[in-house]
Amino acid sequence: MNFDHVIRDINNLLSEKNPDSFNSSWILKHSPVCYRFILKNIRTEAGYIDWDRITFSLDRKFQRRWTPRGKPQSRHSYEDYSEVQMVLNKYQDLLYVFVSPSDKNDERMRDTISISLVRLAQRGNLSAKQEIMKLVHFTIDDWIERYTALNRWQGYRDKIHHQLEGCVRRYRYTGSFLHYVFRTLLCAGRGLCPLYAYSLDEPIAYDSKRLKIENVVQDVETNEIHIYRK
Image (cartoon, rainbow, N blue to C red; front, side, top):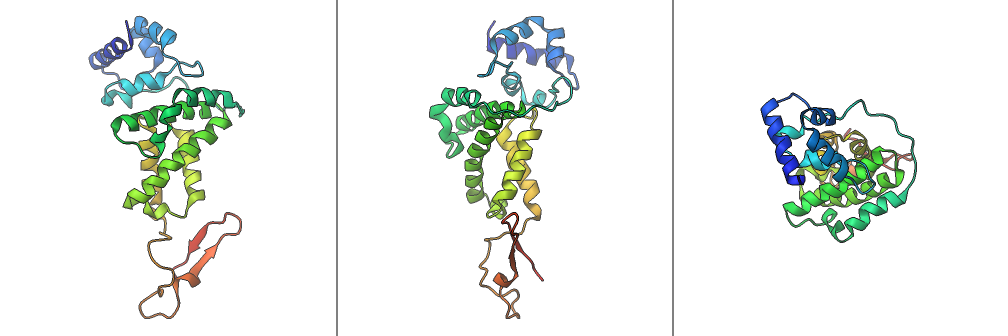
C-alpha cells in the first residue's frame, strides 16, 4: 500500500457510505489498514499526523465533510523556531510562491507550506504564527495590486493583520488556506472606504470649496486613517 492507494480507498469508501461527515475515527472503523498506514507514514515535519495532506488529496466534494475529533482546545503559547525551521528547510527553495506563483502547482505548494505553519500556530507556537503572517502578507500585497475587489485594503495594514490573525486561528479543514484568506478579505473589505482611489486634493463635492484632505483624521492609538464624508 502507498499514499495513492490510501486516497483511492478512502474516496471509494466515502462514495459508498456517503456520510454527512467523517473524521479519523470513521477511517479507523471502516478501513483499519488505511488508518495504520496513515498513522505510520503520513506525518508533518514536526511529527504530527498530517490529516491535511489526506483531506487535501481527497475528491473536492468530500473535503468539506471532514470534521476533526472533539472541539478546538486552548493551547498554551510557546516559541519554538526549530519547528518553523523544519518546515522552512524542507521548502527553502520554494518560498517564492508567496511572492509570485507561476502556475497551479506553485499555488498548491503555497497552500502546503501555509497549512504546515498554520497548524503549528494553532498548537500555540508563536514563532510559526509570526512566520505564516509574514509570508502571507507578501501574497496579500500582490492581491491588492492585482485585484480591483481588494484595492480598497490599501492603507489598512493593521486591519489586514487583524483579519489574517483571525484566519490563522479559525482555519480548520476547508481546502485552500489562501483561498480562505482571499474570501475573508473580500467579504470584510466591502465596508471599507478606499483611501487611495482618488486624490485627497479634490473637492468634497463639485460645488464645495472644502478639500477631501480636510476630512482625513488619523487615530493616534492605532495609526489608522479615517475619512469622514460630512
